[in-house]
Amino acid sequence: MITLYHGSYIQVGKPLVKLGRKKVDFGQGFYLTKLRLQASSWAKTIAERKGRNALPTLSIYSFDYDAVKSKDYRIKIFDSYNLEWLEYVVDCRKGGTKQTMYDIVEGGVANDNVIDTVEDYENNVITAEQALGQLKYKAVNHQLCILNQEIVDNYLSFVSSEQIEKED
Image 1 (tube, rainbow, N blue to C red):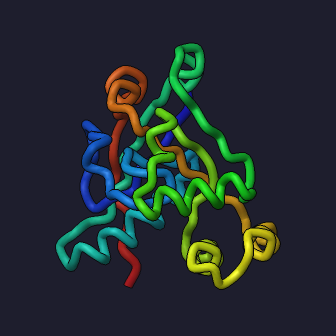
Image 2: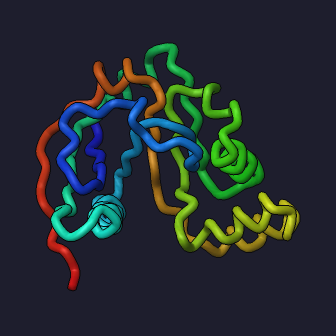
C-alpha cells in the first residue's frame, strides 16, 4: 500500500474519473500524487480560483498499487521528461486518443515551470530536441492519473482529509 494525496477545495471521499477535467496532461481522470507538499500547493491554487469561501483541502488515500500491477491493467510510467512524455502530454492536452491507451499514467507534471516549454513545442516554436533540452533542467514532480473507475472503486481507499491553511 502507498499513500497518495489529492488537493482540492473540497474533500473528495468518492472520486469519479469522469468528473476530471478534459485536455490535461494525462487525460480525463482522477489525479493524485505521492508528494504531500505538491498536493497541498495545488489545493491552495484551486481554492483561490474558486473564490473566497473555498477551503484548500487535502484528501488522503491508501492505494494498493501492487495489487493493481498484478492484474491486467494497462499502466504507463514516465520516469523522466522525455520525447514520449512530451508527445503524450501534447496529445492529451489537444484532446487526442492516447489517453485511451492506459488505465493509469504516472509521471511528471506539466506545471508552470514546464508548461511554457510544452506549449512552445506544441505550437512549433521550438523542436522536440530543444524542448527536451530545456526540460532536463526541471525538477521532476509527480502525478498519478487513474483513468479507469474500476481501479478507483477497488484499489483506492479514502483515509481522511484535512484543511490546509490559506496563505495571505
